[in-house]
Each structure stands twice: as structure tokens, then as C-alpha cells.
Length: 411
Image (cartoon, rainbow, N blue to C red; front, top):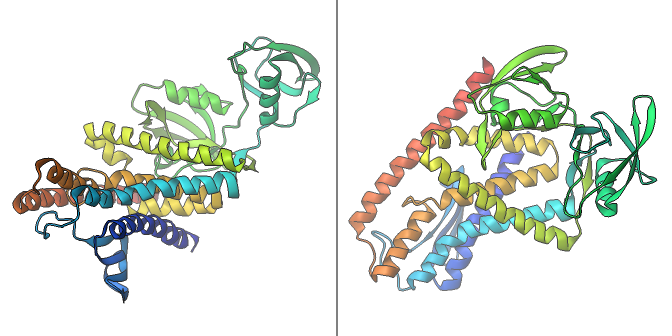
């Protein structure tokens, strides 16, 4: 039941705000809006209010705002081409705004869950410390978690650690250069949270599994797991894991994300809620939304060169439903973060230069602005047919991928 509600709320919010962007700007520039629809026909709700018919469709795979953009067979609009271009771009822009607003709510209102990390040392690049050391104090100040430890070390720059090593308690001096960061990381358990649709999940790794080794190299710390994955340059990782005291092996094909290998797991452990001050949350949320959009577009361009990789990283309705349901189960902040991610994905998808999408419509209107005349109806019609065929192929591929995922899990 939670998954159903999560899908309806999540996708409904994304589609509503996207179409609301088109609607608002259409009204602002003087373009009549014939219909505002969430979902596609047949309609379960229709209401005429002024010049606009408001509808809710029974097929919840998107929505649309019906306006005359002067493209193709539509009557050439009297509204300036650049105003119509703004109408087209307003939908994707609203998706970006929605992502930023949701991230602000997560960071500054609801709070985001961060790991409660003990002060036991994992990977070390600092003289005097060893893996497994438990740091008790920093220059006489007791520390209970890794966040407090890092803050003290960065504030002081130099001092000494009181360290428990086995049955011994000893002092270890430290001295950081002004621009350096502490040369050690926390010892994080290799019990993982596995994200639906990512390589590890598709290979059989589930949340709560404990990773034992990667390519025959034992891993006792999550940073070691990350290192083995990032350094791998072959096809499949051999990952040995334990679940309910039963040891098994998964063969995982890492995916490239922003130039690095990932398999889609994070360290699983106790968390606490952290909120940022409003001003800080505002700047971080905007930066996160813009950064997410930039990374998404970069990845999209890279994958366009490799169509097979585009299909591999794409997900259809089943993937979206599973992901929203899974993240809703982890709490409100994770659910809102996921909606923000999908909002950015919808923004990027709609800006693809295909004639039936916002990106294609924008190109036709831009052509009109440059040439001082609209593209011919025949050219638009042919381009739209090609665009529809490409979209149908993409949809067929991602739906096949969804079905393949389900079948693989059943096996």
C-alpha cells in the first residue's frame, strides 16, 4: 500500500509542477490554454473553468497543457516566438525548481539522516594511528562520534589523540598543514544498503547483506570496498557476501557514474537526523539541484554516444515504482530526495531534442526565430513521426529491462 501511495504522490507531484510551469507562463505571455491535464485519456475528471478545461486522466504516465505554439499544423501564433519558447522551457525549469525546493525541505525542515559513526579508525594515511584504533579524546576533549572528532581536528590543526588500541591507552600527536584534511577515515561496517535498479541489487545483493571480499581481496571496512570497486577495470566483480549466516557469491558489472565505478551500495548503520540553518539549507539545496542537473546532462551526453549504456541505466514504470516505494519505507527525507532526483530526470528527458518533447518544440520555435518563418508542416510531421518511433523504441527497451529485472530476481 505504501508503494502505491508513494508512486501516486511522487509522480503526481513531478507531473503537476512540470505542467504548472507551462500553464503559468502561457497565461503570463497571453497564450490561451485549452486544457490542463494530469494523466492521459480516458478522463476520470473533467471541469471547464473559463477558457481552460481541467482534467485528470486514467493513464498516469504524464500530463500535458494544450496551447497553440505555432508549430507544424497549428495556426501560426501572434505571440512572439521568444515568449512561446519560454512557455516550452517553463516545464523543465519548474522541475529544477521543484528539486531545489524539495532539497531545501529535506535539509532545513525535515532533516536528513546521516550515519552515527563511531570513532574507530579505518583507512589511515597519518603517522601514529592504526586501523582499529578507537579515538577517545582530541587534546583532552572527549569525542563520541566521527562528526565531532573531525570538527575538533580541523579547528585545532594540531594536538594529540587519546587512543585505545587493544588493551592499551596511548597518546598520538597530530599536526595538519593549513589546507589539509585529517588523513584517516572511520571504520564503517561492510553491511550494506542496496539500491533497487543498481548493479549490486540486480546481481542479488540486498540491504543487510555483509560484504566479505571483492575479487578475492578481503574487505573489513566500507572504504576498502569502495577502493576495490573504484580501482576495478574489468567486466565483472566477484563479490562474496553473507546473508543470515549463508555465504554466497554475486558477479557485479559496475556502472560508470561521473567518471568513477559504482555498484549502488552504501554503508548501513545507525543514523541521526541533521538539519541545516535556513540560509545554509537554501544555498546547499540550490547547489545540489544545479549540480544534480549538470551531472545528469553530462551522463546523458556520454550515454548518447553509447546507446547500450543508455538502456542499461534507464528504468521504466516498475523501476520507478519500486524505487519510490523503497525510499518511502526509509522515511520522509529519503522519499523527498528521490522525488527530487526523478524531477531532475524528467527535466532532462523532456529537454531531449525530439519533436514531441519540450526540447524538440523549443528547437522548432528557435528555428522560427532565426529564420523569421516557422518550419514547414511537412518537415515537422516527418520529424514528429521519427521522434515517436524513437520514443517507442526507448519505452519498449526500458519496459523489457523492467521485465528482465523481475524475471532475473524470480530465478
